[in-house]
Length: 93
Image (cartoon, rainbow, N blue to C red):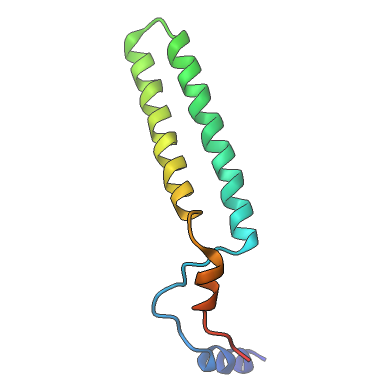
């Protein structure tokens, strides 16, 4: 059984560069993560404004900026023309 799996793995063509394709499952994970990042960003903004200690407020604001960078990076990954990219993926028969 293990030998069959090894042979099948050896026969499959290797991708040198991963395709710029996002599966439906991937996009659902990314959308969830976007929601979590925006929520964390909003919470940081709120608590930084509520905080009376400027040093702590600055640390919370810095964390909020990190979440905003993560949000923007994830959003960038979703801005593909997935239909066009799917045409470039080699189809195995």
